[in-house]
Length: 210
Image 1 (cartoon, rainbow, N blue to C red):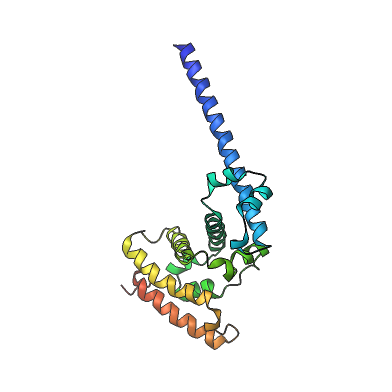
Image 2: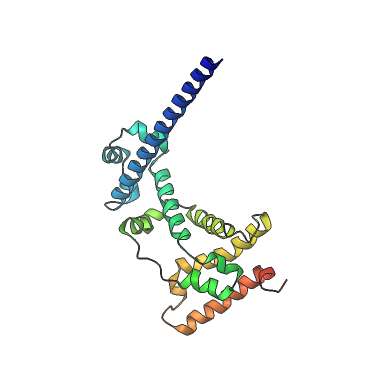
């Protein structure tokens, strides 16, 4: 029995060691593909990048690329979502939604953001974004998950509806900066007052209005 048990433990450890090595190889390969994709986006539009040149830069063969991504556009979707998630997670606005509506709006819409890196700028070029029609939905979901992660709001259909209504309006202000004259305090104050009233009306339970 002891011998059999020893053999089974060895088999288990070998199997898990193999899986760990495989997982590490997969991670390294995906990282190489992503880095190559970002490097090429700095040089040319997304639709001009070929799998052949990307595979050469990543030091893999084309077949390996297709083990991880359906096409260059699937890679772009992942790169875009990863960059958006990193940017969203870097904000300190989300707990403020449940504490102070005006502070939340000011932090969400007007907080100074770090300067975008060249790779981020390449991802966000209109000539590339046109190939990601679902990106607004992806961005919306990333924002919602960041708010749910605060732990104050149950994740359910009703709250999803509320957050979708509220965040879509706020995101539209972020992506259309000409709507607000950020150099005019009166324009900023008007926007803060307008949006904060919507925040309180959407979640009255946090503001003593329910």
